[in-house]
Image 1: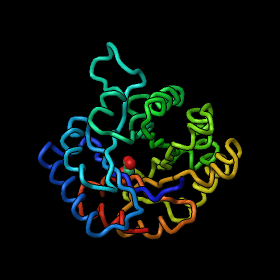
Image 2: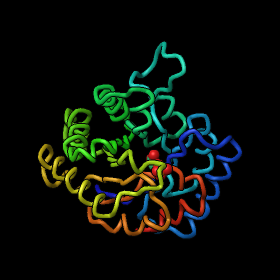
Image 3: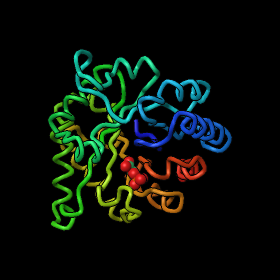
Length: 253
Ligand code: PGA
């Protein structure tokens, strides 16, 4: 079912105590100020998952997410984290294919297809990121490029599996740059993605898919972005590191 979701991607920020304070502040403000039907996902670094999970225990609408996972379920993969480990500390969502992972760690569409399978097969929800670089947008091939990312990493899924996936469209030129996609640019791309999903899975499933926008989403532009018919929430980087900013975004539906 299509949901309103705001996910905070903390990336490689916050030491343990800072992370705990941020999480508890968010939990408290959300409980007092946020509509019940909005879902909030906190994605701290792996090392804080367990302690943040304890802080989310009584929070009805705040869930725990990871920023990545390994495509294998166990074994000799030094430094990696499996889905079982994530589940054992209460993780329910996993961000996959963030542009930073694609760029710095060379994660390909093929590898991401494997990660998507591992996450879904183990009952977790992937937040699958896609998005184009400035060069691709300037060349005018952004729609095809992003649709291909979905085709290559998701279209092998059965409709039953696909229905569980959350998509995050994040133009790379907007991530951490302070340049946000205009509402028209976001709506145009989200509508194109939904059309592409419909070509594979039909109108009903496409219409039910949650598609988030990410890239310099802030308290002062979230309302306008979320008001678009095809934008169902956001994946928030920088602004998720301050509780008040983050919750103001969560309240922007
Ligand atoms: P930003 O990051 O909000 O800091 O632009 C978004 C993201 O990378 O998910």
